[in-house]
Each structure stands twice: as structure tokens, then as C-alpha cells.
Amino acid sequence: MAGILYLVPTPIGNLGDISIRCRQTLEEADFIAAEDTRVSLKLLNHLGIKKSLVSYHEHNKAAMGRQIVERIAAGEVCALVSDAGSPAISDPGEDLVKQCAEAGITVCAIPGPCAAITALSISGQSTGRFCFEGFLSTAKKSRREHLTALAGERRTMIFYEAPHKLLSTLEDMAAVFGPDRQVSLCRELTKLHEEVVRTTLGQALERYTAQPPKGEFVLVVAGAPAQVRQAPSPEDAAARVRALMDQGLTRKDAIRQTAQELGLPKNVVYDAALDA
Ligand code: SAM
Image (tube, rainbow, N blue to C red; front, side, top):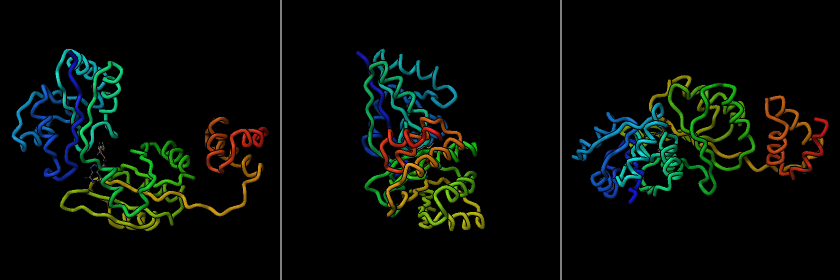
């Protein structure tokens, strides 16, 4: 009989955040797959758990994923932990879950710490509708394209960011969303120096230019404001399609995005853009 893959969330800073169920699952698993075995050993030592560990990370995930799947298929129980937070959210656990799902293996996620949700809850931004955008690309062109595709996004947006990339990300966000857009910069969550700065993109840029950012960040950016505007004309739609194609989007993607941004049916945009 096949075993099971447990996704075990671990603290994002405060060791007290490990749950009773997570602890039990780590104790009872046959083996633990860890993104960084040194980081996980610290946690296991803190919990007094001795268990066989395998290293599962970005650079060995295909081959090691197959080995883990084979062991689970043969009846073993695996607990997957990432460096911190919920496995499979912006980390290689995503691929292991896919491999297990394809192999028909049961995956059980234990709820627990997640940097995105922790940040959203204290951001002070609207939480009713949100989208998770993870890490932006380190390459400027694709980072800008990603943000441009979000220009008309009305939902609150959540981004993960490393401190050394924060300034370039804020610069690009201020250029695309405008310097007055509200942002909550959530830093060192659950740690001693936890801080939430609720400000605008322009002011955040000034603040972190003067005082270089330290620690791990989640950025929670307000969605685009509802615009009171005239119904967009076919000329508006054609101009937007042209602009998006100039930025490198294919005609099909530019039409889809324009239709979404302007709230027009795709066939209307398609007709308007015939000469674009
Ligand atoms: N799977 C994890 C989760 O969802 O909680 C996130 C893994 S991702 C590789 C790491 C990113 O999460 C960091 O770059 C940072 O953006 C965010 N993060 C993790 N811990 C954090 C903390 N204590 N405070 C703020 N952001 C944190």
C-alpha cells in the first residue's frame, strides 16, 4: 500500500509557531525531505526529534523527486519541510506535489505559517480579494512585463522580495502603478524586529534609499482604484493593443489583456485592433 506525502509548515521566525500536529507528523514520518538540511536540523534538534533526512532542493528536485515518489509508492510516509513557512508556496515543494499527484500518491497539507498570509492579515489593505504574485524576476525586462500585466489588477497583490532587490522592485512598481499607490512592507514577520511600514510606493522608495533594507520582506500592494470613466472607445482599445505589442506581447495576449483591462468583450477588442 502506498504511503503519503505530508506538507509540514515550519515557523517563519518564531519557533513557538510549530503546531502539535506538525510536530507529531515529523515524529511519525519514515523520513523528512528538507530544502536545507542544516536549517531543518536546527528545528528538529529544538524539537528533540531524530529522523532520517534527505535533501530536496531547487537543483536536485527532478531526480530526488523521483526517488521520494518511489519510496512513498513503496509504502513510506514522507514529511516535506521547506526552509520556512508552507512548503510548495514559492519553493520547490510545488514540483514534488505535482510528481506525487501524477503518481496517484495522497498529499496531505497541514495548515500553518505562511509569510504571504501573515503579511496580508496585518497589511491593513483590503483582504476580501487578493492575488499572490510570488517573486518577481531578477531580469528587469520580465519584471517590468510582469508588473505591466498587473497594471489594471483591482485585487490586493502580494509579492515576496529579498532585501537586495527591494529598491529596484519599488522603482519598477512606482513606475508602473504610480508613486501614490499604497503598499505595506512587512519585514521580519514573527521575529524580534517585526515591522510593518504602511506607506506609498514613492515614499517607500525614498525611505529605503536613505536606509538600506534588511531582512525578508513581503510587499502587499493595493489594487488599482476603480476608475470612473467613459466607456472605452474602439480607438482606446486599438491604442492599448498597439502599446502592449510594442512592449513585446503577442497580438493574442495584447488583445486578451486589453479586453481585461478595459472591461470589453474580446471580439470587440479584436475588431478594433485589426489594423493595430
Ligand atoms: N514557502 C514560504 C511561505 O510561503 O511562507 C516562503 C518561501 S520563499 C522561498 C521565502 C520568502 O518568503 C522570502 O524571500 C520573503 O519574501 C518571505 N518570507 C519568509 N519569511 C519571512 C518573514 N519572517 N518575514 C517576511 N517575509 C518572509
